Amino acid sequence: MGTSHPCPPLKYLSNKVRGMLCHCGSQNKYARLDARLEKKMIEVKKSSSGHSNFKSIDSVILRFPQFKDGLKNIKSVFEQYDEDSNGTIDREELKKCLEELQLHLKEEEIEDLFKSCDIDGSEGIQFNEFIVLLCLIYLLTTPSSSSMSKMGSPQLKATFDAIVEVFLFLDKNGDGRLNKKDMVKTLNESYPREKSPAHVTRTRFEEMDWDRNGKVSFREFLFALISWIGIDNDEEIAEME
Image 1 (tube, rainbow, N blue to C red):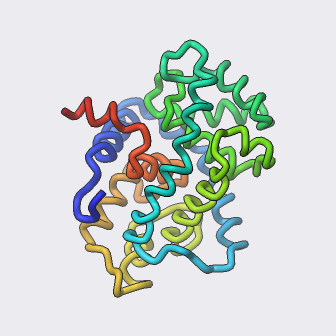
Image 2 (image 1 turned 60 degrees about the vertical axis):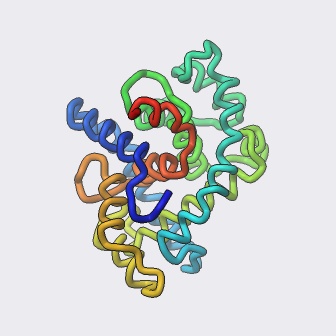
Image 3 (image 1 turned 90 degrees about the horizontal axis):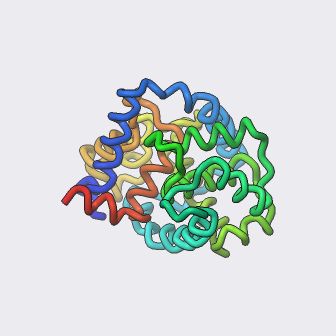
């Protein structure tokens, strides 16, 4: 993905999701989980050393192949629990999946995750949504090493940790959400030799801010990042063509 043009699959996805949110008026279903994520990201930010492996949007993009490699093996887990092979995981399949992965969540927590990750309201979790769901569980519950190994990728923990680090790098003021002003400041002022064009920064932020409220939650960020990485986007490209 070049730094001067928005990624077509991401733009398509973000526009589609934004349209659904506006049409359905369903932002409130995300509120409880996003509040938990915001609190968690603030805690992680405060407990971090302040050192970041990322210096610009380019340094983030250079890690995309590693992110993709770390996430792609989740596909086998997804297919294992998509018992009817319809391309989605329903509530019962998800509960069985979480139980066998030894991820012990309350019924209310599972429902919040399901609703928040089922972005198209299809009553089923697609593969990209499943990746987001597992990353959110990882962040909120700190699964055991046994659970992580069952997710299908030995480097998955490192990948999730790096994705969290990208978010913290962009969250300049440490409030658990991204806003455009701080994102631009982080990308363009902290390391002036690697400045990213202002219009690129603005476009990237708008692609993440699906509900256009000027703030990006970790959940919104995850969906955008996964689409930028190019995980399972062949269908999106086909639809555009």
